[in-house]
Structures are given as structure tokens and as C-alpha cells.
Picture 1: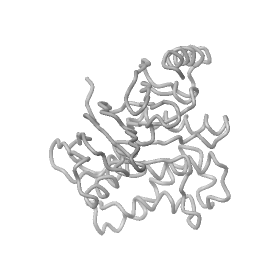
Picture 2 (picture 1 turned 30 degrees about the vertical axis):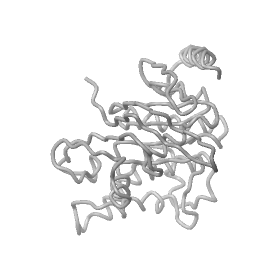
Picture 3 (picture 1 turned 90 degrees about the vertical axis):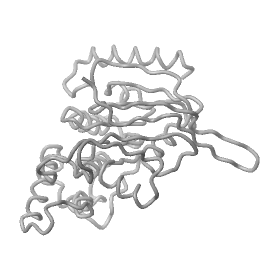
Amino acid sequence: MTEKLLEIQNLTKTYYEGTAECRVVDNVDLIVNRGEFVMIMGASGSGKTSLLHLIAGIDESDTGTITYALPAPPPSSLTKAPVWRHTGNHTSDFSHMNEKTKAIFRRTNIGIVFQQQCLIPDLTVYENILLPMMLARHPEGRDRNLPSRRKEIIFNLCSQFGLKEHIGKYPSQLSGGQQQRAAILRSVVNKPPLLLCDEPTGSLNSAQTELVMDLLNELNRNGQTIVLVTHDRKVAVRGQRVVYIEDGHIAGELRFPEAMSDDSSRELYDERESELTHFLQNRGW
């Protein structure tokens, strides 16, 4: 049974340059279910990133609603699940929150990864990943074991995703792919229900792209919901659903049975890429 995490209704965003009007998001309706891996594709300027920024609360819509359905808090939020500030099942209309409330909501419930890794250059990998844990408000309060528990979580993540040997290094000492993996771990260390990625492989070579996508697929298999903007068909076939944006509105969707895994066959990759290519070509890609 599918469970909605995010529902967007009649979402619109318009920019003005003089008397010229540009509607970058045009009456978009979209549902993202918990555990989905959704790819957003479209030509440059079609509104992909604008839509992602609205979902993240970085920008504000003109009309429409963005609604998150949040679960009840678990018994131990630091090690098992994200921290919720709600009791029972809760629905939050993100689009109508004030900026302060929106920032707190985003810090707790949304992880964001950009094309440029945005790591803090004067902090090590460990310190970069630790930062959102320090900013989050955990019910453990002044637990004396909290620092060691945080350290254990970060070391486990870095060991699982190939950064164990780099945990004490600074971003300038890492490759682009290693930096992006560190940025992703920083975004999910507090286990937000939704991870938003804006062209996370756009500046990486093919080998680095594979490593980053392997990480994202593994997170998704562990239950992480992901919405990712990309121009890369080889990236898009790694998801479960491709949403095509054209002139600010959704012009079509392509669904795959499930997200790809890092051990999927070459034949399956080729089959999906062929299907996606046909889908895109029919929409003027």
C-alpha cells in the first residue's frame, strides 16, 4: 500500500522582467509517495530547478499548496528515525508557513543536495556531516553519551559509503565524487523523510557519477524518499519514475517497476535507457 509523503496542488510561480511575464511553474500537481525515487527531467529553462526550490521552501509560490504528511515520532529519534515535532499523524502545508517556521521545518524534514557540493572548506568531512546534527534539536537533551553516539553514526555512514579513509580530510583534499558523497551524507545524517537533489552528478565524470548514484540507490533501498533533477538519461534510469517538465508544467511521466540497484544487469540498463530515450523524443527532447 502506497503512502503519500508529499502532495503538490495547483502550484504556480511567475517572475516578471519589466512588463514580460515568465511562468516558471505552471499549475503543477504532483504526488510523491514514501520510499519513491522520482527523477525530474526537462529542457534547460523548463522549470525543473524552480519546482525543486519551491518544494524545498527556498522560493515561495504565487498560488497552490505543498503538503507534507508526517508520521508520529519514534521512541528513539537520533539513531532510528528523524526527529518530528508533531504528535500523531500530521499534515503540514509547507507553502503557507512563515519563513522562520519554514526554516525549522526544512532543517528537520528535508535534505538538500546541489550540483556544487557546498561543503564548508575549513571543516573536515566528519565536521561537515556533524554540523546538521548539532543544529537539530534532539529530545535526548544533555545526554552525556550524545557526542559519542553522533560520532558512531557518522563513522558508520562513512564506512558504509566509502569515505572511512577520508573522514579527517578537508574538501580540497577530496575528488569531486568524494565531495558529493560527503554532501549527501551531510544531508541525510538526521534522516529527513525527503531528500532533494539538484543535478548532483552534473559536474562529475562517469565513474564518479556511478559511485554517487550507487549511494543514492542504497539510501533509497533503505527507505529514503528522493526527488532528483537531472539532464542525464543514465542517471534518470536509476529511479522509479521520470517526471517530464515542459514550460513549467508536467508534460508526461514514465514509470519503471523499481529503482535500479548497483548490481543490475547491463541489459536492464540498456532496456530502460532505450525506453526513456523514446519517451523523451516523443516530447521533443
